[in-house]
Image (cartoon, rainbow, N blue to C red; front, side):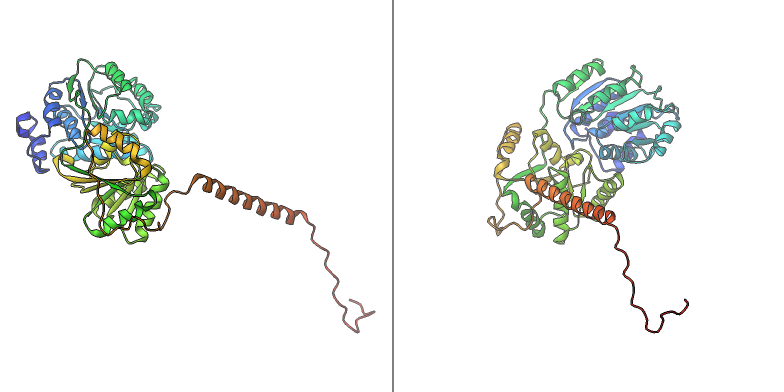
Length: 431
């Protein structure tokens, strides 16, 4: 089916053509017609399936002839990166339209976001926490809202946003069209859909979330302490041009990025402890090709959209199969192809088996020729907890000793100055 068969506004079809898309993805073909008809939608859609355009295109179509100056559409999303990405997608789809959009998320100043509320941009893309911060002010009114999208609803559940979503709902009109997208549908999410949706069209509900067809998956068994050396070996072989690497902790993200840079690989990192400016710069540098490797925690698993990203590496096996699917979904997007490699230590075999049960198949194991699997590790990414505690205690003891020494020096009176030697011949002379 060509995009022209979806009966979208000609200006939207022009933008789609300029972006190089000739036909809709399955989720777009299923979701756009009922959304154009004003129906609520409940869709189970995996990452990389094209679902952003599946909800943006019908909303943009219906906003084309509306008066400007009123915010009529709100997209709720779990992370800053995903909000910024959706805004970028909106701008790419709407260059031939008068429609405006703005992103509302934390880590940046509220001034430009307040202006977006006051000016009434057509579409707001927001994270729940920052949106609720704005709702405390009188200017943040969404009385004219007609369309609500919940994107990555299960991720918002994982991040504890479900109470925030319910609070957001109290600030927007109950009479609206709601488009609900989630990769999985656990019980709390299903309960929320019953509260929010009116006779929704169900899309892919019976299908469990699975990786995109074009992703080639492989497992690299390796000792935990040799993972860094294995990644470096794969990068030096030249098979991977650009790589998104996922680690389990912020500490490991920092250490791995430092290790790669030390060995001549251009790398950056992104995680929750970095400022929004740092995260934005790291992502922009990766997209532009300035950085060959971006090391990230799961905060970026849903929100990084890099055109034709060739490789994703799970440096650490994710604890949940759903996180695995979302991580590797950063490649093979929009029906392209990509490779997803997972480094598995003996201690992580249990998590890998859970992933394979969800996938319904055993992933192929790969051994890298000429790599020394018995080598002595160069560096540790994770310092054992007992060692970290001992180091912290030693540092605190040293600080206490220094403070005690300073206190003792201040409390000890200075000795009286000794009289200097008299000069000969000065006795009895007036001074």
